[in-house]
Image (cartoon, helix red, strand yellow):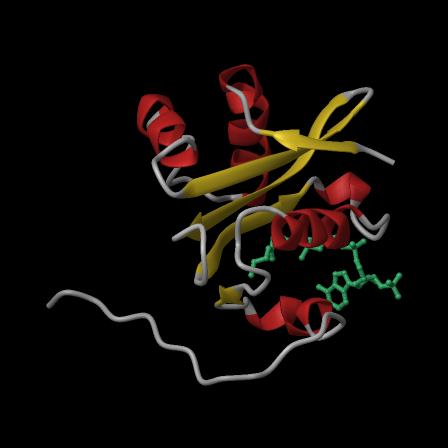
Length: 129
Ligand SMILES: CC(C)(COP(=O)(O)OP(=O)(O)OC[C@H]1O[C@@H](n2cnc3c(N)ncnc32)[C@H](O)[C@@H]1OP(=O)(O)O)[C@@H](O)C(=O)NCCC(=O)NCCS
């Protein structure tokens, strides 16, 4: 099993590699901005580190007391189904999240999240027009 540790700048290249492999361009397109995003005030980023490097990460936005949002969760494709995603979510819930976590799920990941104690609420992403 991988070790889950707080993100450090030396993890950045591997985290960006995971994003790029998934086709997520926002972070890899600007590494300096990505580092600021992953370490911003109110952000907790945890990484799952295996002997061969970083295999997953989770980024949470939190007020540190009550409300937390899971912004990013990703596990390397070749290491999925081994419990790393669930371990990252549990670690986040144990961290400074106030014990509850809101999130918007991708359609293909709903059954993953429904394995945790949860309540389903309608979710929206609003855009500036
Ligand atoms: C979603 C994701 C993080 C899950 O990570 P993972 O390490 O494969 O998950 P785990 O191995 O901890 O899975 C825990 C359980 O959920 C199940 N599960 C995992 N992904 C699932 C999915 N997409 N749909 C249904 N069940 C899933 C596993 O089979 C496992 O079941 P078990 O406890 O009975 O063995 C991973 O698939 C991923 O990175 N996906 C691409 C990015 C993504 O969609 N992120 C979430 C955005 S909302």
